[in-house]
Length: 298
Image 1 (cartoon, rainbow, N blue to C red):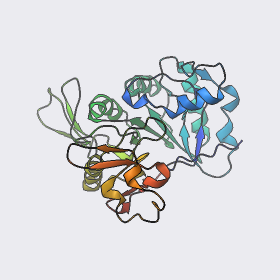
Image 2: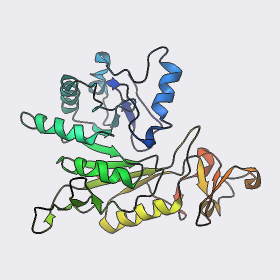
Image 3: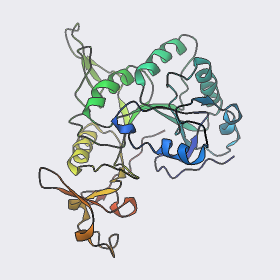
Image 4: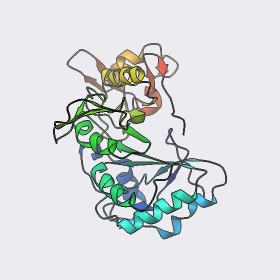
C-alpha cells in the first residue's frame, strides 16, 4: 500500500494511530482535523483509534523511505494505550531500512513513556523524535522535556505564529536553562554548566496554510536561521504559507505574474513590514532570496 505525501521533509506518511484534540494555539487551523471532517464521516477527530490493519505497512515498502509517523494524530495523546505504542515501536524496529520521524505536542508524556520503555528495550536508531513549536512560549514548555530523551531530536516550527527569541536559551518551568542547539544545561542545584547534553539535530520552519491562516513575520524566520547557522544545525524552511512578506516578494515577478498586490489582502506589522495573502503556491520559500532546504544525515 502506497502512502506518498506532499509534505516536503518526508517521503511517506504512516498512520497506525489516528485521532487527536487541540492542545495549543497552533492547533487552531489543524489540517488533520479538516481532513477528518471531510473524509471520516460521522467519526469525530477526537476519537483515538489503533488501526491494526496498517501496522505492517512499512514492512512491505521495499526501498528506504523517510516516514512521518501519525500525521493524523499524536502518539502520546492521553487516550493512546501504552501497549499500542509498544506495537508501533516494534514495527519501526523491524523496518530498519526506513527512517521514522515522529512529532508530538506532548513531549512530557513521551518522556515518561520513554523511561519505562528504556528499562526493557532500546530505542530504534532509525526513529527520530520531534516536538511542535509555534512560539517562544512552547519552546520553554516543550523543548526541555524533549531534550531529556537521549535520541535523535528535531523540532517542527510550523505553523510559526509568534516570535521565537531563541532556541539556544530556553527556560524550563522548574527553573533550569538549556541551549537546545548546542547541548548545554544549567540547573539550580548545579555548580556549573553541564556540557554534552542532548541537542536538536534538525529544525523545520514554515508559515500557516489553509483557510484562516495567520501571517508569519520574516524576522522570526531570520532569527531562527541565524541561530541554526551559528550552531551548525540544518534548517528546512518549508515556506511562507498563505502570507508572503513584502520584503520577499521583490524580484519574484515570474511567480507573481497576473497578481495585483494593490487588490490583495494585506497585514501591516508594527515595524512597517507588510504581508500579503498571495497563497501558498505564490508565496514561495525564499528567505532573503535563498531557499534553505537543509537535511541532517539520517
